[in-house]
Length: 268
Ligand SMILES: Nc1ncnc2c1ncn2[C@@H]1O[C@H](COP(=O)(O)OP(=O)(O)OP(=O)(O)O)[C@@H](O)[C@H]1O
Ligand SMILES: [Mg+2]
Image (spheres, rainbow, N blue to C red):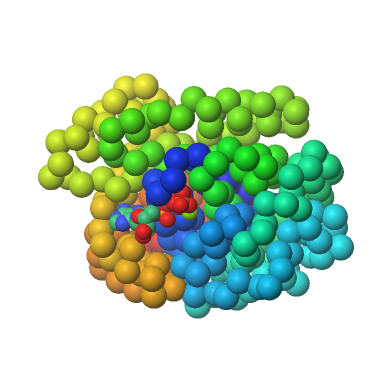
């Protein structure tokens, strides 16, 4: 039974895709079967894994149950990590209540039914809006991870994301966990970053993850080479950040699902 984590924020450029690609990379390196689903028409997660966008989106067929995720997901350079690539014009097919209702449920069920030999974790990379694609992601997800960039107005818009989560919960009649808020683009030498981090932790003491993701140009370079940081520069500060973030997320998952025994330490 896979665990589905949506990475969402309506703010652009806060590190959603970088977090999705690198978290997925380290989750797979830790020995879990992971699927990264690119739900953004910009297809940055797709290209960030070195995969070409297909001419047409597979999402409508996945939502109406005529295709299986396994048939249309692609292998990546990391064993155990597959990607469901995105294309432009992705928005249209999911802009209906049907897609978010029955379609989302069908898609979720495919993942829940997948045996652990095929799938442990699904990561959903959302576009920078609270439109139909993010709403769909929330309807499919068990939990949501929200990147918060360490800059002015960092917390602006957080309330809206959390409100969308609450609305999805009440229409689904099940809980969507807050996986956590992750501080991104953190520069230790910049006072403002520390101030923002403190403020976020003051408002969300339980939900802010301990690991801030350091600002590191290697992360942007890795994306432009179509590689997760664990392959591109595994000894960089950015790699270290995502390795530690992955440990936190997996520890959270272990306590929730009791699968600790299956999970090797990502550091080894
Ligand atoms: N920790 C980091 N250090 C340096 N550069 C980063 C870091 N995180 C992200 N970036 C760069 O910042 C830009 C925005 O990051 P990213 O694409 O992950 O954000 P996003 O929230 O997915 O953006 P969008 O809202 O457009 O989907 C990218 O060029 C990325 O390579
Ligand atoms: Mg993105």
